[in-house]
Every structure is written in structure tokens, then in C-alpha cells.
Length: 339
Ligand SMILES: [Zn+2]
Image 1 (cartoon, rainbow, N blue to C red):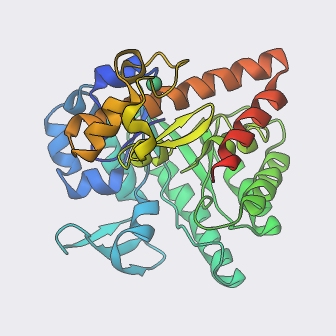
Image 2 (image 1 turned 45 degrees about the horizontal axis):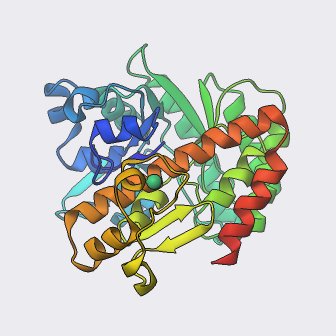
């Protein structure tokens, strides 16, 4: 899922997203409720109509942003009080309010409200936040706002195997439509992410519900997670790095600001069918980035979203035809070489 934080995947129109092969996108409850507010979006016909995207939308619950962006947080068992990063106003999110906001937005998948704790915190703190996440998960389900909206629960537990396992057991026992894995890609090592996903995969066993790894990731992370049963991802990385001039290809990362590209008449990636690669040269894009022309951001984003979604399509095909390990090795070599 490309990430449309503020009811837009930055620099792209819905037509660009469709052309890139996007099936589903993500919207952020925290941002949309602070501005323009969930009530205003509801009055304007809901998030799909507001942003003119008629495909599926998943909204997060706001928990991640409250704990990563907002200032002056106060957490109690009922919810979180925080200061808006936009205007300093005092706001409050509870499981019930997070579900109400997501019902107003009218997303297809709503997320339970959870408490993120960074894996580096003391174990007692991670354990307390994880238990609170379970109580909030029950309240989120109880506050389910509309029958046409799926609700996913979120597994926490940091990188502690026993806490993770207990969190999977708790969330799995509830009547969620899907299971999300939260609290990763927040500063832990790649090895910790892999071993935590291993624990989650074991504990979930043959549970048939979709599995969603939140906030991941890089091309290599997709393979690590898919190998451990993950179905769904969201990440700002492909769009965020595109706006700095970094594009992803089968040969790894390229920086379009590098002088080497200024005389290169070839496309970003000769195998890519996106608008940028079909029509424009690296030299043109290198020029646009140097001149800070707005088109640079759109073309680089179109390419990265197209390439990433195409990678996921190839990844699915490789599972079907047995070439997963080969594809993983090729992508890993390309992306490790230049990092
Ligand atoms: Zn391209």
C-alpha cells in the first residue's frame, strides 16, 4: 500500500496510482483528524470521494503517530492526550474515538488503537504497553462503527519473544478480520525484525486471516517478511526517498542528483514501464532535480511506486513458480551493494 498520509500519496494523482498498479492505499487517522478533521471529510462524502480514490483504503488508528510525532503525551488506561504537531492544540485519542474517526473517514479497513513502545525500552515498560494494547484492542472491536468496514488487530510485544508470542495469542483470540504486526521498523536491527517475524509466524500457525506488517519497508525487508507469511505492507520509503532523488531499480538505488546522470540519455530503468521511464532520460530527471522543478518529485515518485508494486507482483509470481530464493538473492545483492 502506498501511503497517502494527508489524503494524497505525495505528488501523485489517483490516475498515477492506478497506472502504477496500486490496489490499495493507506490514510493516516492522526493527520486527517487534526487537518482537515474527520467530521469535515465525512460531511464531504468520506475519504474515498474527498481524495477521488475509489479503490480500497486502510486507515491506521493514529497510535503510531501519537507516539512518534506528537509532543507532550500523557498516556493513561483510557487513552492518550497529546499536543498537535501542527498548531499545539490539545487532543485526545482513545480506542473509541480512533474507531469513530475511522468510521467517519469511511475506510475499508480500520485499525485497532494500540500503544507503540520502542523495542529498546525496559521490558516492564514494553510489557505494560503490550497489555494495554490488548485491552484497547477489545475496546476497539467493541466500538466498531460500521458493518462494511473490516477491523484489524495489532500485535505488539517489542522484540521480546515471550511478549510477542503472548501478544499474538491475545490478538488472535479476538474477532478481528486481519492481524497486523506493529512495533517493528522502529529502530531494531534487521536480525531482530526477522526473529520477531519468525516468532509471530509460529504463533499464528495456520490462522487464515490476512497478515499486515506495518511501516515496512525496504525491498529486502519485503522478502524477509513474505518468507514469514506476511501478505500486506505499507511504507512511506519509496515515495519519501523519491523526493530526494533516490530511485529504486533492479540494479539497486540510484541518486538522480549524481553528476554522472547529467549526460545519460537512457531511462531510470530500461525494464520499467512507468511514465518516467517510457518518456524521460536520467539526464532530464537529473536536470529537474538540480533545478528543483516540481515535475522531478512526481516522475521519481511514479517510478518508485511502479517499481515497488512490480517487485511485489514478481515476488508473488516467484512464490508460485519456485524462484523466490533467486529473486531475493538478486534484489539483496543489488540493494546491499550500494548501501
Ligand atoms: Zn520507471
